[in-house]
Amino acid sequence: MFMRAETLSSRLREHTRDEHAAARRSSFIEGLASGRLPFAAYAELAAQHWFIYESLELAASAMSTDPVARHFVFPELFRIPALEADLRYLYGARWQSRVTALPSTSTYCTRIRYAAVDQDTGYVAHHCTRYLGDLAGGQWLGRAIVAAYGLRRQGYRFFVFEGVDPPLFRARYRDRLNAVRWTRPEQDAFLAEVSAAFRLNIDMLAELGEHWT
Ligand code: HEM
Image (cartoon, rainbow, N blue to C red; front, side):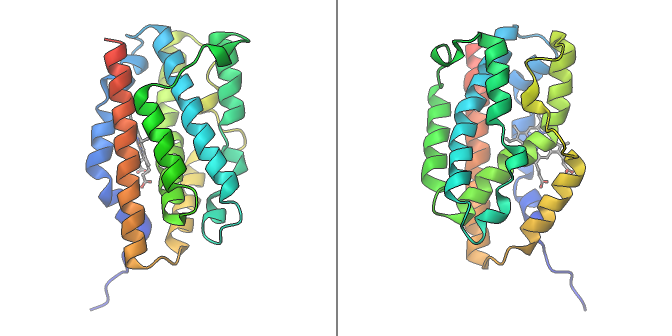
């Protein structure tokens, strides 16, 4: 009987089902989406994102000539310019001296520096966990935050990917994942690092939640 080959994107979805469900249960995210938390909590999330994306986008530069990872370097997704504009709005011109990384965020950044530079599996794992999330649930969260805090034109550029159609981009991204010629052990290493990345996000959201309860 003919069996359809299992694709890497379907393995990814299956592998992250439980972790994704745990991430979705974050009370901090729910508190922002409903506007229950003070606006400063949203600013603190944006600040944590800045540290994470700085590490991630430095890894992208370092991996831009890697034969596999270079297919997952998308300058149109880079979030640092958007985050810096948001942080200027949220914290003022001297934002850089007003933001600090939480311990869980520092742990996350250290992990990116260790796992996403040099190893294609680690880089793609950290890349897809953040950007596919931003292009999926992140779009819903952005709309909810804009409505909940009455944002007008500024402070939410992080959620807006100029010139990118999120569902189409996600579909093309999955095609790229499915085209990667990794051995089964390499695929397993990729999936293990995706789990680590999810866990780091969940821990960071939990720490933010503790801060703002
Ligand atoms: C309340 C919070 C969240 C909601 C409502 C949400 C919702 C969604 C939705 C609707 C999808 C699309 C699934 C599909 O394409 O069929 C998705 C995909 C995804 N989300 Fe989330 N999400 C949330 C939190 C997170 C978090 C915290 C992360 C990790 C940083 C994350 C990472 C991902 C990833 C990596 C995908 C792509 C999975 C794939 O295409 O295989 N999500 N999310």
